[in-house]
Every structure is written in C-alpha cells, then in structure tokens.
Amino acid sequence: MTSASRFPVAWIALSQLFGTSLWFSANSAADDLMRAWGVTPGDVGWMTTAVQLGFIAGTLFFSLSGLADRFSASRIFAACAVGGALFNAGFAAWSAGLASAVCFRFLVGACLAGIYPIGMKLVVSWAPERAGSALAQLVGMLTLGSALPHALRLMGASWPWQGVILASSVLALAGAVIILRLGDGPHLRQRPDRAESRPGQVLSAFRSPRFRASALGYFGHMWELYAFWTLVPMLVVRTVLVRDFPVLGAAGLAFLIMGAGGLGCFLGGAWARHVGSARVAASALFLSGFCCLLFAAGGAAWPAAWLLPLLLLWGASVVADSPHFSALSAAACPPHLVGSALALQNAIGFSITVVAIALTTQAVTDWGTAVAWLLLPGPVLGLAGFFPLLKPAPAAE
Image (cartoon, rainbow, N blue to C red; front, top):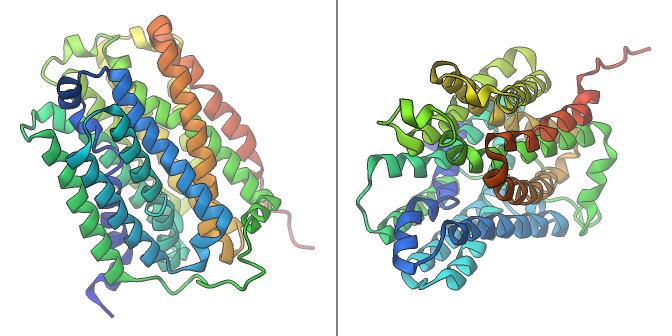
C-alpha cells in the first residue's frame, strides 16, 4: 500500500483543488487584463463563459462516447490536468487579446471535463460506502478555489498577471502527479464490454427513476449556484454591507460569502453519515431557496447585522447539496456507467448555468437586488423533481 492510498479521498480532494484552480485563474487577473488589453468587464466575462462552454463540450464528449468508463480514471484525470496546465500556460504566454484568450480558455474548460467529474468517479471507486461525505470534501475544495480570486484581490497580490496564471498551471501539474501515484480505486469495474460501452449507452441511466430524480434536483441547484456566485459582488455593492464593512470591501465580502460554501459542504458531508445524502441534499436546497426568497422579498434592505448572516447562510447552503446529488446519481446508475453518467449530468447542469448567468447578469442593472427572484425557480423546481427520492421505499412483501 502506498502512502497516498492510505488517505485516498484526501489526496483526490487536494488534486481536485489543484486541478480546478485552472477554472478561475483568469478571474484573478481580470483587473490587469482590462488595463493591458483595454477590455471591459463584460469582455472578461466571455473568458469565464468560454471555460463553461469548453467544460460542457468536454463532458458531452466523455459521456456520449463512453470514454469516461473505458479507460483508467486516474490516467484520464492526469492527462487532462497536464493538458489544462499547458493550455493555461499558453493563455499566459501567447494571448494578446480577447480572441486568442477565449480560445485558450475554451480548451482549458474542455480539459476540466476530465478533472471534475472524473475526480468524482475516483472518489466513488475508493470510498463507495461514504460517497456523499467524500464528495463533499471534493466540492468543498472546488468552492474554496472558486472564492480564491476574490481573496487574492483583497490581499492586493502584486504578481504580474502571467505569474498568477502560471501558478495555477504548476498546481495542476502537481495534481496530475498525485493522481498518477494514487491510481484507480478497487470498487468500480473499469472496462465494460463492447455492448455496454457503445456511444450513447449512457442515456439509459435516465431510465432509472432514482437517477432522474437526483438529476432533476441537481439541475435546479445548478440554475441557482453559478448565477449566485457570479452575482455576489454585484449584489453586495447594492446593499449596506460595503459601507458598513469598508475594510473588507466588495472583494472581501464576496470571498466570505462564497467561501462559506466550503464549510457548508464539509458540515453537510458529516451530517450525511447520520441521515443520508438524500435528506442533506433536500435540506440544503430548501435552505438556499428560503434564503433566496428572504433576500428577494426585502432582505437586501436589512441592516448589515442581519443581512451578512443571511448571505453567509445562503453561501453555505447553495453548494452544500451538490456532492450529495452526485453521490445519489452514482448510486442509482449501473456501475459501468458511473463516469459517463456523472459527466453527462455535469454537461447538462453547466449548460443550465450558462443560461442562468446570461439572464441574471443582463437583468441586474435594471432589477438591482430584486434579480434574486430569477434564481428562485431553481430550488423550487429542483425540490419538486427530487421529491420521489424522499419517499420511503415500499416495504417488501
């Protein structure tokens, strides 16, 4: 037994953090890029959208082709981490404007499709008996990575923007090395036969009522999650928080609110060991929807002493359900389709985020904090679709 295999979930979570640091690396250099290239915040937003679109294309390729389940998960992860690191470095070294930057960021997103969902498959392959709590560690690390650009801005990092980007590439390469040393877990069949791995076979997972219910809950969650993360800096500047917490400013407040999701994931993972992933997922989705309703219905005008706890609770709950939807989906589909099914679920979920982000960022200028009403259908419809999983199983005859 290698030293890495003694704590496989911890090593996978660390590698996931390193690999997914590529996702938001450009955001940490946004101010420098706007000055250097003379672009607008909306132009920088296209680089984030390019990553999302690349991720969608990559996950669709992995899932519909069946490649996610025909080859070693650890090798796919490592290869994609190396590829993402190289494309990210290319963005730092050779991008001279928005057009080339968008191309490089799209390719980074495509490589991330072999890191995030394949990392979930690796967790299930090592610890299927505690998949919910283990995946919570993975998503918690991803959440902290999502918040990191705001922390860097708060600290006033003085590196050249290329240095910030290249640091993410170095981390991704380290993640590839860790996963290669760890290898695949013993609990998933790696190589299905030809009939099971034919292109499009993954769609059969949706015949399972339990998989459909979990996927529908996940899709509602995704409508809210990434749009909320995108809107946080825009929302806090429209409240009393920036005025009452001038030391933190918008960047520091955004980091706290988004970073609270990491704590929410870890607490949800611990709770799932006692009550199960279905209850944790439903509770978190209900709580985030309730926070959204309070904020939209007038909470945005509350004093800072009430408003900040509300937003922290929203930030903690809005992502705490994510790992449990993935764990439930993995448990509900055939073992030979786990990697492809999770990749397809991610692809559809991230396609939903593109629509939600576009709609809400266009509306926030005119609607202000009332734009939160546009987020509310996500948790409401997600809970409705997820409800069958909360029903007690029928007693055996």
